[in-house]
Length: 236
Image (cartoon, rainbow, N blue to C red; front, side, top):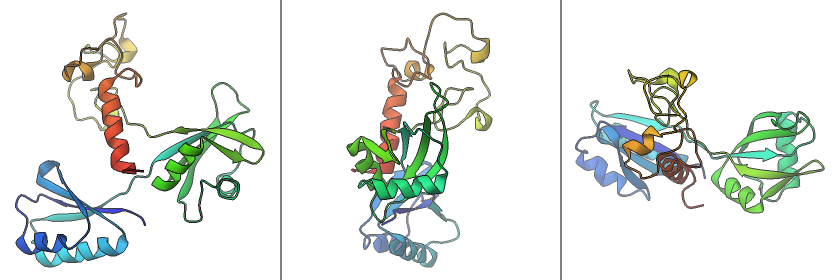
């Protein structure tokens, strides 16, 4: 079933009847920032019941909204031809057991690899079960090509403040921090030969001699990415 999530924002003290009502749901309830809660529902029926419960027992002081569900993503590498999205979707489901009848799969884009203009790589948005099945299988067939599969779940990195989960155009920071050396200039103006990750510095990690964009070295990035993956995929 599709997992749907609702958050009741601004909930400083939950209404008695609402709290009693959500105990009847087999849901996972988490505290989130700004005094809110996040309730994970098993499906659309439970989500609708929860919305009805909130409308009956919570006052206008509370904001209740459905949170967009994020699916995990996969990258396939090794296609010898550029295939249209709909045709590629059909091939994947018909040629690979990892894609079952109820698999959710959306082909986001298809483009050539950097190494070869004649080798193509699509990005897929899939459900959690299909994500786990395909990664476990390791390869997928696309027409006559046996293609490698990679995890494509990533975090956004801001090139203004070096923060995660947003880009520079939506950054609220008033100061500039270089993603390469951590000083107060743009990375395009950086002339430093010394690397320093401001995120690992702020987290008091011992190893900071890398750029904030180095996802293989940055402990903060890797920890946040693991948390993000778990929030999307759960225990699959």
